[in-house]
Length: 339
Image 1 (tube, helix red, strand yellow):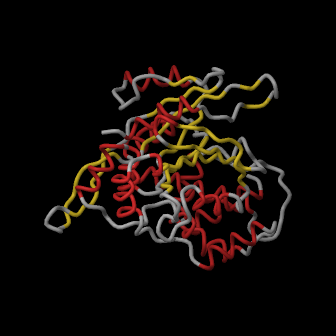
Image 2: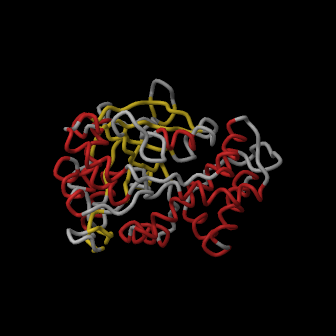
């Protein structure tokens, strides 16, 4: 195990404990290569890897279908290659999202200091959204990418915008001064002490969650009637929408999982160049709190997060793995959270 991997694992273990930290590390192929130069303190790559491991662990806790698949893979002796995670954000009309920066900017401020760069934009016009691919500068093939999408409220009518303001305008900012200061250090090209990294890492992970108040049933239904994606963000916020396993043959895997009765997407999505192929489980249903017409709290079952699978071929023009996404593929995968 390289110094970088040891540093990331040490952070994860400090937060999850020896047993759970070791279990998550054993599930995933190394995100950081052996032989990387040793540096004092925690590097941005170590922090990025540890954050991804914790987000992966959190998704397994929330998504039983993902946990079942991962358990089967581990039992068969296969480690998982964590390709990318996805989050959804809201861009209100000409304003921030409550105390959060507007739309995807809330996560750009986290990802860029940790070594990520915005490498491509993917229009999703059918969803009135835009996706952005964030790829790690240091280890682009092994540290998971982020697919960050943004729903454009200004592309809906005024009634929808009013509901969106009510629901998302109460958003709070999970990042405190210590977390922002640590990100500033990474952005300046510095490392941070281990104890500081251990203290702020849970805060960074907590940013990937819901930070607005439960909405009313009426507002939820109003959002859902116009946008299943807006309704999903209303209950799940900026939580990890899905994590993705990079596999050799996603078509064969999809057939195998369908035969086992797993909740699979009907078809595999193929990119226009044919090199990127994706499918997914349908979202697990979860119970979430709402406010009913009488002003009392109630619970309803809604779509939660899910697990995805991807195969990537080598790009003959570069001789490297094709790490791109595809707007058509992404639009198809978004449907996994529709009721």
